[in-house]
Amino acid sequence: MEEIKIQNLTDEDIGRPVEYKRGKIKEKGILKSWNMVSLFIVFKCEDPEDFQNSEAMACHPFYVRFIKKNEYNESEEIDDDQD
Image (cartoon, rainbow, N blue to C red; front, side, top):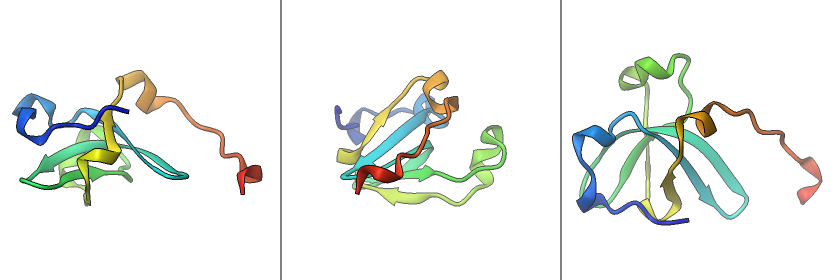
């Protein structure tokens, strides 16, 4: 996974789908904004087109990568036997 570089982000990146992955945690979301150290990702959103009105979580860019829109919409099966 290639880390997102905050200094390379532009306004066009707002609204792009991302994947957060750290250890066994893997979740898809939408990039809402950023500051000098964190990306703010919307993970739970009823309407992805309305992500700007949803709460975002701060995430370290090392654990976040951009994904294609069709990857964001794919459902994932959870394997409970991975413990």
